[in-house]
Length: 460
Image 1: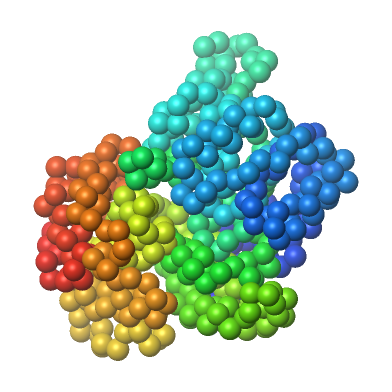
Image 2: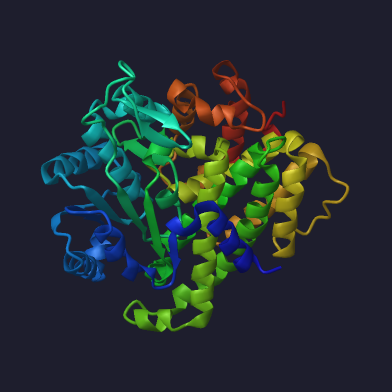
């Protein structure tokens, strides 16, 4: 089965001609900006400057007839509130009519959230949860119709609005195979003082012009490569688990078969080849056909993760990861937690488990015959396959082995799960939970994750 071709077809189905993806598409950015922009702002990570991409983008956009009003530094990992507020203030000063972001998920998320604050005002906490940006836009005189925001005066339908609020067009250039932030309705923001991450979920913040030049990822370091790939795998896996009985189940199964297969097969290859390439010879990495194939596989797969989370929502692994931001990268936190949630969800997700189990078995990470296993036993077997894969890419499998972990992280995760702003994660679970059931159900899952003992997990 050609998972590459299937992945490309699925992405074209997902975004149509609006999405520029593949090798060499960065050259198309200037044309996108020039098609409607008169004053651009470029928000990018230090990597863009160090690798020469910043100068290339500024020159090409300027030569296309659009002045770059400001160059703003992007966000640190996990999009800290402080970075979000700084970017918001700089956007307010620059006053662009088109925004170009160049970075990974943290910078793109920061731009999404900053443009919401710049245009609609208020505090960032006003927008955590689903649909609150659209609600605010409606309050300012827009309504949802035919899948898009249409101008309307809600107070007086007969009169026209001269200056309705709208978000500035966003050209989101992804630089890492990971979150697929350039394709999705999510913006994560972290409070570093409390160590807690929360998110905006709204169709209104989906970037209008997503771009992903896969060649930018060719020299990504091993840690970033692995973290991003496992974030993408978690997106697909969690949505797949929650899709049983949903109308999009068959579509997410196609996404899972292609996306998870590409990551499980090619992530170890990408890590092995990247480790063998000297840091002072990046061009040798680009010329390595095995590495370019592996990198394309990860880019396609994590983009499919973006498709997945636009069909359904993530749940357990992501919910807990939001409380582990001070000790684990996002991808590692999700990868660590998902096997334990797999055991908990097992009685309700037998069909997805057979698909996922077959992928890990084909790759050699699961040797147990799954044919006659059902329910919890099936979930435990698949979880052990996931543990084996994690060890193969040097990921932790227990919270107890993570440097900096304390019991306070368990308390934080249980408290966060009861927060109404994160209720959507509970509702997305294959076995939906309510706040009053968190301690009795999620508590044992987290305890299992501390020691690695899945026997303590209680199935509902």
